[in-house]
Length: 286
Ligand SMILES: [Fe+2]
Ligand SMILES: [Fe+2]
Image 1 (cartoon, rainbow, N blue to C red):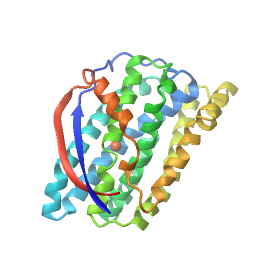
Image 2 (cartoon, protein in one colour):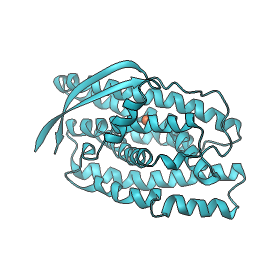
Image 3 (spheres, helix red, strand yellow):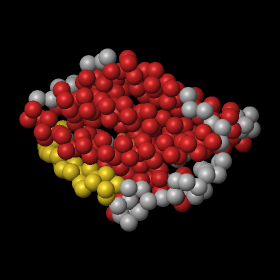
Image 4 (cartoon, rainbow, N blue to C red):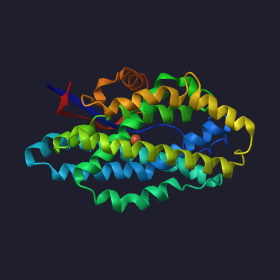
């Protein structure tokens, strides 16, 4: 069945202090900090790829469809460009701490390969990664305790990014459908993206722990086991949600977005709009 959904994407300014250096273990323990730092290191390069894939996908649409998607893609680009900028400033602190961003270099080195794909498959790679991002965002917004030990400004940074990821979670998926992309390739690309993402995240987390000098401490790994595999651990919670992407009737908008909406409403003064919401009616399978 086809239904029409309306997506409002507002580009916001995050009004937090990004100048004060980060505590070395700002997330509370060495492992959790190394993992979040790894994710942040991937964002400036990764989100640029998302932006570029959607720009190319938009250009490939017939004129009428392009006009329909253009406002939403513009909102998506504005949000991701802001995320890139904020995480680049966050990452500059990590560099000053002596951490080394190898993940960004790996993303850059794959760029030519991804760009050479049929545009539908490049957009499918973005849609698959956006699903992983949305699942992580849901995990974080539902569990503010995960970053309870972090300074408030850093909790706000991760929660703002999470809320906006949920807000624009359907954009790449919808564009893929409008480009004529089918389920088999969408799922096939997800099967490639998921293990690659997990391997990259693990490698960068280990790299961070190595440079931090914490990799050999037993407490690092007991904290890692609890954070990843505990009853409410990240992998424990996320695995079933990742699998949903493989279903033929999957749509990102099927997941509840109330936590994102509530966070953005409760923090309107902290994250004022710099570009008004744009609306795009886009077809969604329900
Ligand atoms: Fe983002
Ligand atoms: Fe995103």
